[in-house]
Each structure stands twice: as C-alpha cells, then as structure tokens.
Length: 268
Image 1 (cartoon, rainbow, N blue to C red):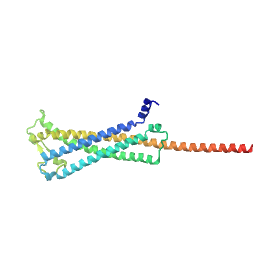
Image 2 (image 1 turned 60 degrees about the horizontal axis):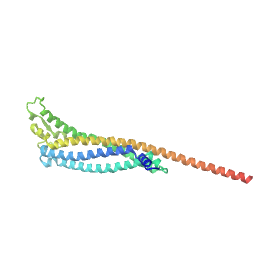
Image 3 (image 1 turned 90 degrees about the horizontal axis):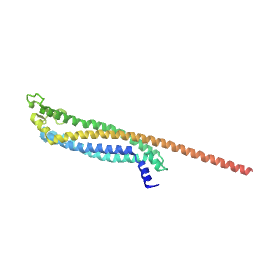
Image 4 (image 1 turned 90 degrees about the vertical axis):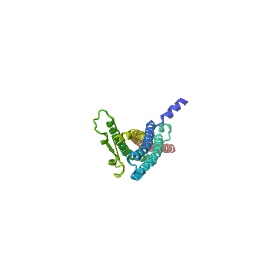
C-alpha cells in the first residue's frame, strides 16, 4: 500500500461528525465562559459606580458574581475534558475503525459506556437549555436600558423633560430596595449608556448568549452521534454473536463428517 492510499485510509477513520460537534462545543463554551466572565465584572463595576455606591448594599451580589465566575472556570474545564472524551469515543465507535482493525469487537462494558454517554449528554443538553435561557436575561435588561437611552437621544421623541425617564434596577431584584441611589434618570442615564463598561458588557452578554446557544446545538449533535454509535455497537455485537454461533456449527458439522468417514473406513 502506497503513502497516498494509507493516508486516504487513515482519513476514512476520522469521525468527522464528532469532530465538527467538538469544535462547535469548544467554541460555544469558550465564548460563553470568556465573554460571560468579563461581562459580569463590567456589570459589577456599573452597579458600584452608578446604582449602589454603598458596598454593604450589594455585598451579596458581589459574592454571587464571584461564585458564578468560579462556576465558569469549572464549566470550561469540564467541557474541555468531556469534549475530548466524546471525540475519542467517536474514533473508537465509528464504522471506519472496524475496517481498519479486523479484530474489532464490542463488549458489554463498551456498550454500557456508550449508553452512559448518551444519558449524560441528554442531561447536559437540558441543563444548557436552562443556561441559554438564563444568559438571555442580562441581554434583556441591558437592551431595556439601551433602548431607553436611544429613545432619549432620538430627535423624533417629544419629551418635555428627560429627567422624568428613569431606569430602576431595584425592580429586577439585582440590588435591594434600600440601595442608593438605585436608579438613574435623564442625563445620568445617558452618561451610563455612553460608558465603555456598559457598551462592552452589553455586547459581551450577547456573544455569551450566542455561545450558550452554540453549545446547545453541539450537545444535540453529540446526542445524535452517540445514539447512532450505540446502535452500531449493538448491531455489531449481534453480528459477532451470530458469527460465533455459525463458526461453532460449522466445526461441529466438520467433526461429524470426519467421524463418519472414520467409521466408513473402519467398516471397509
């Protein structure tokens, strides 16, 4: 076999579906974790500078944001390992592996592991649907503030006093009702929307939400691949069992024929 034929055969053993799902999963998790981490820091800065200037008023929120950032570290680490494991599982269960390794056989343990991955990926997919919905909440809150600022700057707006337009973040439960000032009105609100922290955090939340959506798509893709691989392993085990029974019957038939020939020779 030449070098070209060998390369073609090796490329045939690559599970391209699992590879695409892994790249999509890594990209989605990286966007969600990286952008979400920076956006949370920017959000805390905006709240401290404009909505809750007393540290004790938002102490619990600070602890929650720090906890979420640590959770983001864990999510990134876990999905890096999980994606590699699923990619390796795809390599060993693809039909091309059977062509490359003639002695390839399935075991009960291998089928159980594939079934476990299907169940775990299903649970993770449901969890990431919740994460995707949760990541849309800050996008909605920042969009409301941005649209309010855009309405104040619009020349079509017929406003007698812009100071009557306010955004009160206390009504969202982010900070307690006794936080001061708790809201921003008029020109103060416009100044907040013009800050780099607001602009960066708003767009990073959008990217993080898109990353969570990409991760959901990747997990659905993984689920389809794992289900197909599990069905392949199940069919392969049935085929191997059939081949073993067939070989055993052929041996028994050969033994019967040889004994019959020996009996005929002894009689003759």
